[in-house]
Image (cartoon, rainbow, N blue to C red; front, side, top):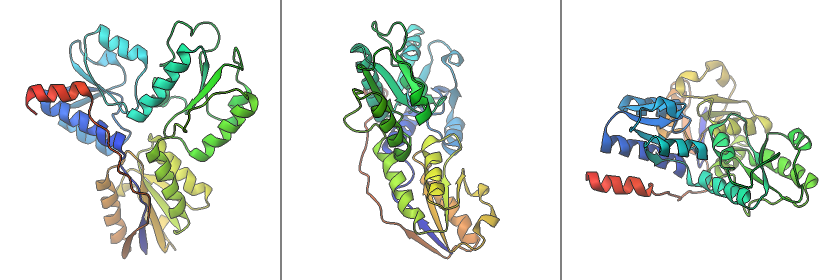
Length: 321
């Protein structure tokens, strides 16, 4: 049985940055450090940071006055930022810069008086944060910002002025599915304005392209990632759409021996929030169950890095870290 590794896979620059922020804040200020929402959607990462003293909360109400809070990589609404300021919380922002880019687009359209249509998944923290960027004097009356998840949602949209509509997208979606929705939006609103480049992030796109290639060369696809990870779920869905059985696993303990029956080549990838250590553990389990060869599939190299927030760099300098 051959194990074929997708490239690229695993951590992206935004996830690397978010985890580094939590670790450096813990180093500089000690525990407890509060994090609004899971800093990234991965059980292994969250548990490791929790052991170090990170306290994950769903709402700022769970953060005592005057304490330190980190905003997760998924971003937060303007209302959450305002609440943190009002309560004098010390904030370090781990929002992925590519999510921030979408936030700035929404804020700009708001100022220009355009209604915004967000393509995304209801209830996802990134979507909640992006919806919460539409806050300005002109955002009054019916309209504002709308969420669509499917082509059918597009047909049900009710906007004030079809000549002043713009769209943005959640960064972790499937490009293939998003294109269909964008086409439906353009068909219904010929004057709709979109980003110069699609908002789906480079890492999401690269991992989706990699799993498409991987699926052509294997009998089974395993995706390392947690169930609440949007980009990991998209990788599994892509493999299934290409006709290959696929499973989303948090780690080696989730693998079922019956999945491997009759399989000659296993394709293995990992979502952008899944650490490489988990991939290694999965490879070890597969070797124990008959995997004899491990090979890396060719892929697109990634050299993107994101710097730490300015206020954290200054705080680390003062603390001597």
